[in-house]
Length: 165
Image (cartoon, rainbow, N blue to C red; front, side):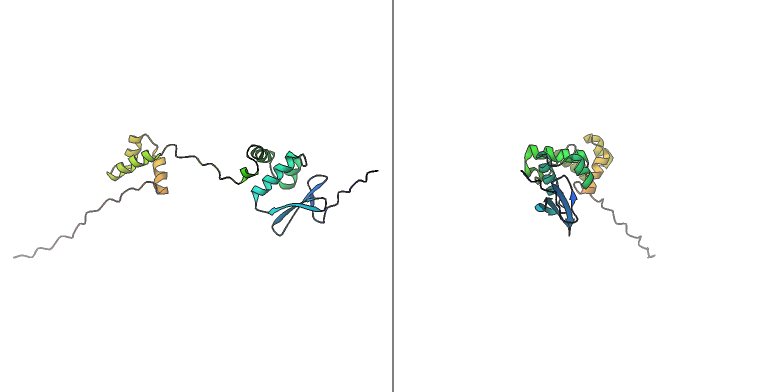
């Protein structure tokens, strides 16, 4: 006759399922299968958390509701992590996020805008000629991608007092 194993967890462990538990101590999150620790990561390591939750969910060991209840994670967040794991595997959690390239201020537009600013045209005039919003050019100025040349001021010397001859 088979003997049942009672779900025995160490003190301070929150149950995720009948077999799995989790505890957070000293900035480390520890996952337990009964009394056996199976995975550990830093409390701030979101990527490892998403990886492990995806693995547990895909193996059928946890439910979305349990993750939401214990960790306060939304169901859609878990679904996105699971989709990423299915499509790219564990390495997908550590790949750099894709960034969009410039859609309006391409290198050619920036070059043209800088040339016109160097000629002394106003920002509004440059924006109108290049068919770009003025705010977009202002943002590029703040970011340092464009530079408005400083107008040289003519030095005005004080009038010299004329002495009668």
